[in-house]
Length: 374
Image (cartoon, rainbow, N blue to C red; front, side):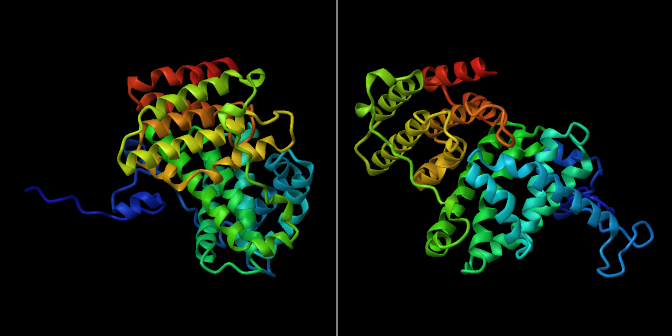
């Protein structure tokens, strides 16, 4: 048996190759190994040495790092905060209140810097596909997420507001990763579905924080961010006058899923779970598109999906995937909004790639809606 080639560390290699102990080819933003295996490719930048970066006497922080952080914080306070909601009350919170919490909790500040970097990637043509900015966004996200995960086991009155704000920021960042085209793990259909499942898991994390710290959050300055559960009217109570194509398509999908009901408990749970999820989607499509709360409600509605639905998605249940395609349409109907732009279309295409012919009839409307809206 031929001997395996020895592994020699390379300066500046991506973290994925380092963990796998393979030689990194150093291409940026994605090395050959990660591109070939569809793995996330992340480079952690070394802090500049004193020879190539000016250092401020008071803090000892390299000037290049300080300047970049100031630029990103300026970008957040000038532009990014406006994209976090369409509701003027919530926009004001993201502009004034959340940054105050961020200056007391470094992980939240890192989250703001990461989301600002992603926003620049979407809207600043000079920085689009910038290797440096991609690395910056990844670095701040990784550092913030590590602290966030650690603090979830110790939610207090002091940190719950910062944790709750960050739980929404990280969802926006994950949507952005799906929207942008240069992350290899999201370039294929299974990766898109995995990305959506991760977003749903993160939203469940936000719900857990809101539940555990409910009293503190209700008494705090981020209280307006706590939304109510959506109303889910049964299909038979919806007047025929508002039975839009989306409602009719969902009703047909419900009937098909109901016809699959078996006698065993697993089948009953599956059908019940899918039908309850469709109820929430029906509420999403009945939302007034002119309301200032529509963006937040549709983006946040998976918070209320049954955990069994997430399990079905993770198992790649075809009925669950088709239901996801309808949520993709709801996202797409929001228009070309930062972070979620093109995500809905990618979800619908991914589902079409992964399910069998049995479900093709129920993907006609989602695919038509995506094409019609461009």
